Length: 150
Image (cartoon, rainbow, N blue to C red; front, side):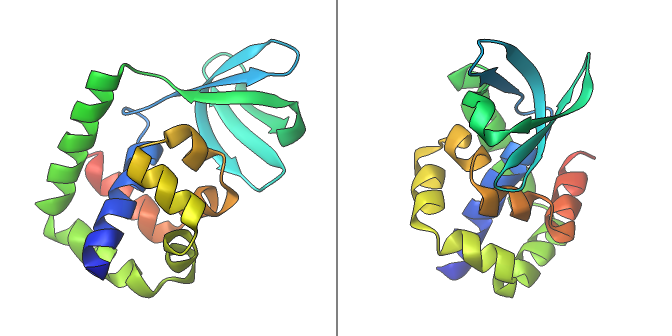
């Protein structure tokens, strides 16, 4: 049971962290819009990698919404593809099993908001959660993402 939860959680993490699967549209309170990949969120400031402006730091108080780009059918197919690749890759499965006692993973798995957003596939809510964004920076999670990008 715990293994299934971890696999599900980490595959959602990989989905959000895997640049080919999702980009983000960040709408600011002043009406301007940035498109790119959210690299990190420390609870106060987002770091967003954009194609034209490079890495931009945005204070949370200036963000109106964050939306994941891509159509729902494409997103669903990408999720299915990633899950299949994770489940059939012994190296990635090994990393996932090693992560089950990681404090950052436990913090994410024990957060009802994150669990609810994961179950609903609400990537926007996940990407705005500091615990989730911290986990995306975890070295082992980065190894999973790197393994999936091969």
